[in-house]
Length: 598
Image (tube, rainbow, N blue to C red):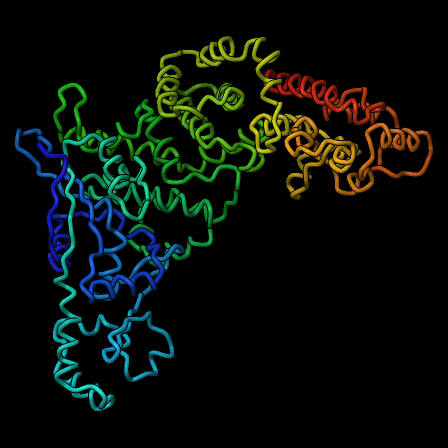
């Protein structure tokens, strides 16, 4: 059997198939991302009989019902939603949904004299040469004869016959040809993804989460649109609570649902620690509820695939939709989400930039939800999730093949009666003395400030409520929350003036420290020996020139919490390499101590 078929149809037939449910558009109510000018250009191409590309459909497999009969699957439109929506907006006058979830019309104007299209604007509304909204021409019962007479009276430069000819050409865009690539239902999701990437001329790659969402969106039987809206609205509200009122006004049916009640808490909530996309939400809900890691499996299950017999059965579709819905509701639960955020905060994570691995966060939340469902003790859940998140960041556990690792880890957490045992197994295998003594110091030998290892060091400082370098009362957390900067222990200009001109050298993360700007300005381009001599003098009663530290005890505590070696009082440019090595060891020791106390 062929992987695909290529056919041609016309715009009218395509819209008819959509209205009859033969072809399902999964994203028709999601935000329309095209600019109005792109809608105008599409109409211009149709009018001039230029090709407008192919749309791609994927046949849902036929599923066997319990009584033995066959339920025929729909064709899902997986590429071409924006084009079809644009056509329906311009020609049929349908409203589109904006990114803010407001409904609006996109009105395309047409000038028959010059035969050009434009997005409607105030100047066009005042100009008698323009048809201000072409959807009027396409309406059933449009008075062509009366319109021609009136238009030609106002614009005598065009004849009745010429205008009639142009209007016929305009309305004939409904019969413009459009190609359809129909992918077979027998294709695995990996093959569908690869085909899509290769033939998509816009260069937009759909992920497996996109295909899963398509499967969810078009299944009315098992509340697919409700599940999809819950996912979609949650992910938009978490980033922009102000769209709440727009959802309330523009989607009254969903606003009256129980699912909406479960996510409306977001209107008064603001966090930038974990802002999941719909791909993240799908992955977490699927991983913890199905105990699987590969989203391609979700696509297959939502199609009803029996992995043993390779048949497609309706009861598998029903069960999969029910489990996914349960997983989504557990994800969006106010209690669950806020408690997970509190766990992140308790580990020293105070903003999204501190954990660059979204997969590590996703698995941590999936683990949290699994342990809650297994009724694990709350205090133990907090400890396990904290340690697992930080441990997975330390070894970059989910940076290579995250789906395989998700699958492996979630299954093992599920079978362990005492899940802390699995954490301890990971520690024994991945976080041995060899890791802390050799691998971790080597990982700190980098100039990338967004390095997970530097972020882990900062997390340990927040966890310990450490003060900033040479500060008496300002904490590292306060500096980060006020967008304070990272500065250099060995000032950059000082190193440059002493021959260290390679950026990757003077910007080593072992040379970084969160420092108040006023302290940094006081240090300027001095060597550590020079500015520490000034500090010792102010401790002995001299003028306060660098920060507020005025006693030896406070200074010693500050150096320790910022992993500054005691040799700092004598360090000059020749000592820079030794300083980096010594400070890396101290940072490793601090992170190790932090991890053990989580």
